[in-house]
Structures are given as C-alpha cells and as structure tokens.
Length: 135
Image 1: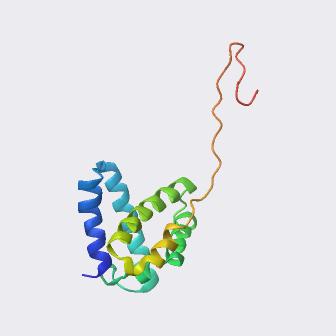
Image 2 (image 1 turned 90 degrees about the vertical axis):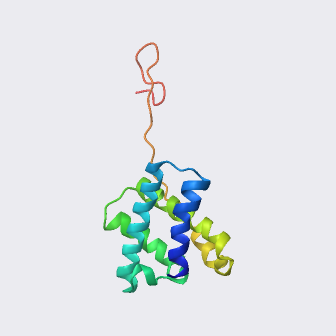
C-alpha cells in the first residue's frame, strides 16, 4: 500500500468518522469525489490507484480533474467547488501526516474555488413589488 492509499483510508476512518463526526451524506460525497479523482488519475497516469503517490496528485493534476468535471461530466461550478472542498479536506489532513510533501500540498490547497452567479431572491413589499430588484 502506498502512502496515499493509507492516508486516504485513515482520512475516512479517523478524520471524517471519529474526529469530525461527519454525516453519512458528507462521507458519501467525499467518497464519490475520491472515486472520481482516482479513476481520472488512473486514466491520466495509466497506473492503478493503489500505485499512485502524492507526487502524482500535484496542482496541475487536480486542476485537470476539476476541468474534467466541468467539461466532460458537465458538472456545474457549485458541484466542482464541492469536489474541490473534499480534495482540500484530504490534503489538509495529508499535510499533517506527510510534511515531506508540504510544497505540493500547499499548491493544491491554494487552488481557488470557481466563481459563479448567485440567483437574486426577491421579496415582495406591501404593494406586491419586488423589494430586491424593483421589478
């Protein structure tokens, strides 16, 4: 088992389950993100996920994965950002266990979320007119 495999395993068993007491929905979402990431990396590197190392998961690879989510899987910016949050959580945990990869981990943690337009929520005033956008 490589360093990444043991870290991912302890991330789910120790960090999410015992330390953070994450909900089963959060754990499932993070699990799905890791499955997608590892499958993407297997296609990219032509190596089994069990043979991947932290050097394979650099900022360029993570950005390529995020682009893959948007372009090939047609995910929204919000979904992309949710996947990035799961990856950041794993890398924050890895920073404590693998200080030898601190520079690589810092680069991944510096990947910004993608901006997106938020819908304006209108509230009607007493006259039945929208208070937010005056429509």
